[in-house]
Structures are given as structure tokens and as C-alpha cells.
Amino acid sequence: MTTGTIYGVGLGPGAQDLMSVRSDRLIRNAGYVAYFHKAGKTGHARRIVEGMLPENVVELSMAYPVTTEIPFDDPRYKDQLSRFYESSVERLIEIADAGHDVVVLCEGDPFFYGSFMHLYTRLVDRVPVSVVPGITGMSAAWTATGRPVTWGDDVLTVAMGTLPEDLLAERIAQTDALVVMKIGRNLDKVRRALVTAGREDEAWFIEYAAMDEERVTPFREAGQIAPYFSILLIHGNGRRP
Amino acid sequence: MTTGTIYGVGLGPGAQDLMSVRSDRLIRNAGYVAYFHKAGKTGHARRIVEGMLPENVVELSMAYPVTTEIPFDDPRYKDQLSRFYESSVERLIEIADAGHDVVVLCEGDPFFYGSFMHLYTRLVDRVPVSVVPGITGMSAAWTATGRPVTWGDDVLTVAMGTLPEDLLAERIAQTDALVVMKIGRNLDKVRRALVTAGREDEAWFIEYAAMDEERVTPFREAGQIAPYFSILLIHGNGRRP
Image (cartoon, rainbow over all chains, first blue to last red; front, top):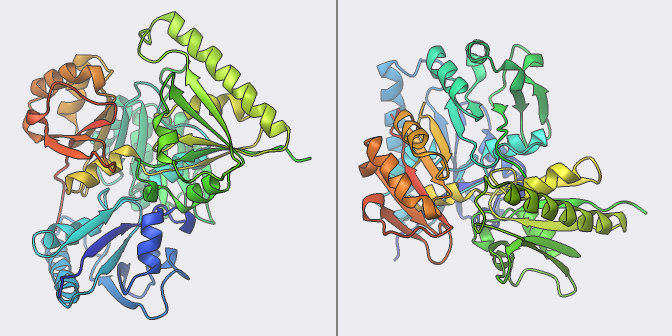
């Protein structure tokens, strides 16, 4: 018997037809699919593939023991998540050892700020793992603005809203094009950093890029609440003939 | 009669099954396809879709009047390219005005350092234009290394090898994760900038990511020649439970 393969499959930004042909095929032929979700919720990855899974697929839902209830610098956060990833990995390896492949559903691109990486590093020396890249949420966001994000020699900086305010302001000031993700409860801080950097008027706020609720707003006009799927964007203005 | 739409279609990094389902459908049903290429060569975008185009498709090849023969800061470069983009746009608009859609083949993601942007800005106020994002070459590159590129709060910087050496060194020193594209004849300069930044040992060199010739090498062991499809990568090492 051959050991099964664990596939980390990039789903892209959210629209089903924006996933790759390779991901589409793996999902439509999956025997086992696994996905992360918040306890009590379906989870966005699972929602994206609604209607695509074969009838007899076995679903492994992996419910985070904690998301934002404990700050991530609390040792309990690290400890609980670490044990959660370990036990998820044990379940996946058991299935692979029985000769079955498992498709792990990953929003966006698996190796770009994704949770799958925490499984990947624990799996890679023990069972065959294959990663399928995906269109990132930020690609969908700049496409939604109807303006190219980088030209010529432009530098693009991707930073998280979870960074300290002064570091964030520095990064914003120093780059040509900018993407800020993980905004959520950091919205006010991100706004102050933008103002400090003197770039508030250049910034766009994109919510739910490539999804039905897609919305593009000048950042100045953004409200007080940032959904999980929100991205801040500044376009570059590099060389153009 | 309805005016046709010009589709800027992201092809992704090169493997046919890494393009999105949406791009795949548009290409397989295209009446007109257009693509950039170097005079006398087929062009990489056209090569990616080999075998996918319908039998009666009309092909519009757009041959660059100049690529690296004239430095890009020479006014003749800007002038020749600008006239080339204008005339390409006129051809596209003529077809759209006759009621036909045109699929413009774009390597990677159309709004991310792509040539399509130069058509896009000239088209967007004149005919309907629709952009389909794609998996970027850099996503394929970090997937090829078998290691996640960004974790937790990591900052990712994307910079072009065409930047001046001192600026490049500064960018390399200041970031967590790094992508350098457009290396080609800038390879030596990029190497010196890496050494100045003290990060040569962390860097990977990825050639032809997601293509048959894919090759991943520690940058130290990279040769003296960088093909067009080469990317330099440094992985982030951020928070991980």
C-alpha cells in the first residue's frame, strides 16, 4: 500500500472560478477534505467550495481552540495552538498512512500568511505533502480597484496591521506600493500610521475582494469597522511609457 | 450591436493547470487572442496556452519594437514603446467596436508588474475592460522552495533588480521576507547588494518556477547567468506556534 499525499490546496480569494484548474480538480475528486474554522462557524474555506465536493467525501473540520480570545503574545495562545496543530497533524497522518490522499482547503495561497504552514512544517518530514499555490487576496484586492498596483521599479511592501504603530508608519512612508492585511481590530492604529506617514489620501480600502460583497472605498471614507476580509492598498506610480 | 470586452487574462506562472478556471474558460472559448512577444520569438504567454486555443481563433501578436536594446531611461525607449502601445490599443478597439471580445494573454497577474497595464490605462475609458487576476510567478517560486514565505507579522518586500545597488541593499537589509524580480543582467549588482545587506546565506534562487525546467538553488551556488524567469527569495521567520 502506498502512503497517501496531503495536498495543501490554494483556493484563491473566494470566487470559485478564481481557483486554479489544479485545485479545482483536486477538490472535485477528493476522498477526504480538511479545513480550519472557528468553533461554531462553517469557516470561509469550506464555504468557498460549497457545491464542489463529491457526494461521499469525508470531511475533517479542524476547529481552532482559540482565535482572538487570548492575545497571541500570551504563552497560553502559543501552547493551545501548538497542541491543536499537533493533533490535527496526527489525524491527517493516520489517513495518509491508510493510503488515502487528503485535500486541505487553504484560503488564498497556502505559503503566504496561511494557517496551513503550521501543519506543513509538522507534516513535511513524515508523509508526502504537495502544495498548490493560489491567487492571493491582495491580487483580488488590487484587481477590484481597477488600477495596476506596481509599475516599472516600484517597491511593494506587504505588512500586517498587527505591527506596532511606529513600525507600520515607517513601512508606509518608505514604500511605493503598499498592502496592509490583518486590519480588523487594528483599524484605528493603521489609520494613525497612515496619517503619520502622510499617505492617507492615497489609500484604498477593499472589503471582500472577489466575493459577492466586494466593496472598494477611499480609505478616508472607510467606516469604523474592518471585516476579516479587508485590505488596505496604496498603488505605485512607477515608470510608464 | 454591443461593443466587445477586452479581457486581461492572468495566465499564472506557466503551468497550464495553475491558471484559474475563469482564465481557462475564457481562453478555450476565445474568438480573438492577443499577446506580447519579442520580435522573432513566439513569446512566453503564447507558449503557455499552446493546445488550448479554439481552432478558428484569430491571433493578434504584438511584437515589442524594443526590449533591452535601448536602456529604459533613454527617451527613445519611452517614445517607441508609447507609440507601440498606442497602435496596439487601436487594433484592440477596432475589434471590440466590431462587437468581438478579445482575450489578452498576461503572464502571472495582469496588474502586478505586467505589460498589460500599459494597454489597460489606454483602454479603460474607451471600451469595456475586464481583468482576471492570476497566480504570480513569486507564489510559484516560494512554493517551489518547499518553505512558507511569510509567517505572523513578517514584512514582505518585493523589489526589482533594476533598482540602484544602494537602494536595493537597504531594502534587503530592512525586510523580513524578500522577493527580487527582473534579475537578468542585474545579477551581479543584486549579489553585491545581498552581501552588503549581510543576507547572502539566507537567499534562494528560483529559475522557471512551475515550469518543466524549474530549479531551486541556494543563491550562493547560483551561476553567473540569470534567465528571464528567475526570482531571488528570502523566507520570513515570523511568529509560529
